[in-house]
Image (cartoon, rainbow, N blue to C red; front, side, top):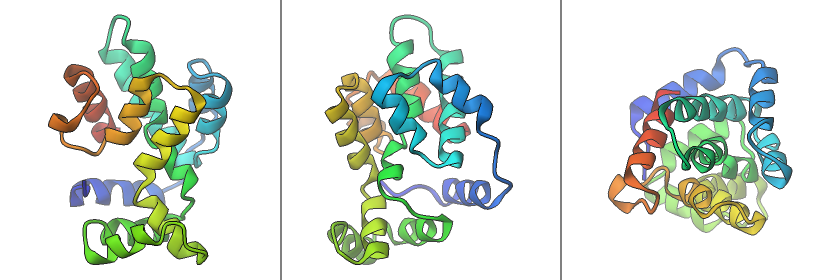
Length: 175
């Protein structure tokens, strides 16, 4: 699902602004993730890690009960597929603008191309699936995997519980 222009604009401004200091965010995440999930989180860019921790903090503050653990991990890892399609700001902008068009379809079809920039842009357009597949291979909680795959889908297509998905989506939009 293509992101709204407002969301894309906020993300662009964030990516061209001052680089955030990840120290406290990384430390916070390390208290909630372990093993290969933590290593996968650490492979994300500084900005993606700081964003994911901001999302997870909002989720943790909003939820109580047994779902908090997996929901916080889902928030921390929802964008992990981006680390599997490494692009700078310009590449992300080009891929995002192409998404949902014939150009985006062309890029996605070339996600496994040998031409690196084209392949990375195509992979970036499928980062939700890439991230979910990697999390599944690690044996992550099924709802963590589902949220990585579904976080840009309409709510009626989520397999995560609707109430928790709503908290996750609102936190992602606000962070």
